[in-house]
Amino acid sequence: MKYELASSSWDEKEIAAMHAVIDRGFFTMGDAVKQFESDFAAKFKSKYALMTSSGSTANLLGVAALSYRENNPLQRGDEVIVPAISWATTYYPLQQYGLKLKFVDVDLQTLNMDVSQLEAALTPKTKMVVAVSILGNPAELIKMREFCDAHDLILFEDNCESMGAKLGGQLAGTFGDIGTFSSFFSHHIATMEGGMLITDDEEIYAIAKSMRAHGWSRDIQGSSVFEQKDDEFFEGYRFLFPGYNARPLELSGAIGVEQLTKLDGLVQQRRDNALKFVELFSKDERFIIQQENGESSWFSFTIILNPKLGDVREKVMAAMRAAEIQFRLVTGGCFLRHDVIRYFDYDVVGNVDNANIVHDRGFFVGNHPCDIRPQIDYLYQVLSDATPHHLASN
Image (cartoon, rainbow, N blue to C red; front, side, top):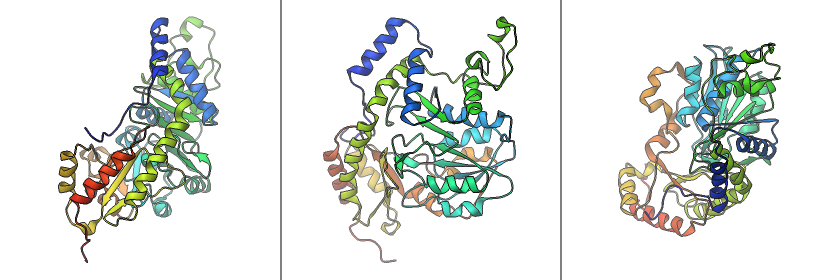
């Protein structure tokens, strides 16, 4: 393969960290996970950080904690404003907790939620806004935070694709009442599988921590969310919330400690690659590329074929396959187009024309934590040759 979707950012330090865990012989979450959580909280200036088995389970535990908190919990039938494009597990916990989704179109340039539609999506039943920064590019997080504060709404920030991105100098993932991250392979740091939830709210953290491991009290002794009993034997197996097993492995925590020290450098390399991508593609009107909002951490490079080109995506994708260039759908595409939507309670605010354009005419290729400028040159040549050089006049 001449241009792959992803590559490893590990070196001998991650391998040594895994060997150290193997030598200790303790593989479920332990001291390495705690260290990664502490380091992550410090890096993102958050009071609490909770490592999970994936970014998906970080989303699940975040929604769960909001549903079981004492004051103003999420309740079945409450409405949540969401973008029409995101990964599936942005939406699944919302459905699983009985919430009604209000889908809003995306901006065709940034691929993030069109915040001009927030007021139209607002009803007396609105309880939360889910902010998703797509593929490294910060959403309009400042405006969304202001909107939520003005209407007493929860801001849930799914930052699983955008670790290391910034808006106004502030790290994405830190604008919400909850922020979630993924460290799956191909993401900005990789811990095999893994995720992180951050919050400044002690109650949300404690409930999520309990629910990460069966909903028991063992992991949150001394927390204010429950009254501890005198029976120490019972307390070891006392269940407080209907939880899950979303625990990470100690191996993943140890890798995370090493990977987090590299985050800034890995993001900078991605940004350096993006300079070449933008240089080649931004002035070519055949291709609509993602416009940076703030400082993107450039998870990948998205390309939308200009609608004036006609139906050329199949031809372009065939050319990429022949050229050994890997590509895929932009995140999960327009979620409303997937079969699973029949299980959801939802409304669509206005139309989702832009999300459909992205779904039908878009794709992305990989960005990497190493210099891939020659591959980007190769990509541009392949796409240029496979695409009509003139747009239709109508």
